[in-house]
Image (tube, rainbow, N blue to C red):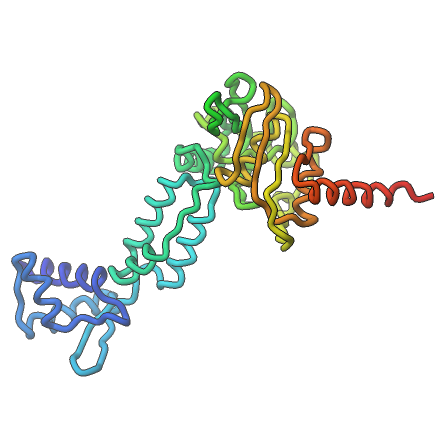
Length: 333
């Protein structure tokens, strides 16, 4: 066995099995090596630790009853890994399976003990997770197109209800391709967007990454942002800014009837926590437990006559009052 091989195995053991709270003694490390049919004595062990430190590995010594050795989680501290895991858990545009896979990768970059803590606290809420499992490919191709200054084409989908009252995907415009000059990937309102110039409409548009599919990088160069925006001083960072507010109210089970073409918005907001029922080819019913508050009424109000609050009567009356009080501002003499 070469010295390099043994030192590499010691490094792997320290990375996987040690952290500040769980230092490993010489005997601990030796037992792990014996499981790999490797052995060492104290002299070679100290030489290997010194060699690893010389080439840049930060191996800490814990001085207690017994000398122990450990490596801080690389490349993340536990707090950093926890923040990343939380971000993945809350991301709507990543499917549940993809979330679990990505969290496993993040956990593998911490010690065994910290990985256990990350997973023991794990809760992936699939209520509003995307149905699209090709997000990684989509993001990769969009970023490559931006780097190469190329246009992309793709299909774009909405959420619909199938005959089993299950959420499903349906391509817009009978699956016709969109042609877009992509400029930026933006995370906003808990979703991931591609900001780009919509060729067919000749305007800047925001496209949800999880609704994009069959993305292809085209040979022709992108339209410049100044031309696309028709503004030489256009600032895409300011354009991409988004504000999201949360407001506490009271909890109620609300029944709504709405046009089918707004189903995607409700699916995004409430996911599988709501009960959906087809009323006809053009209308659906949704029953959902919500925090009734001014932002909720604002969410409903944006759909105008495409939606109707059915029950409970308290919410119906409050929504009427909300609309009437808003209207009064514009009826003043």
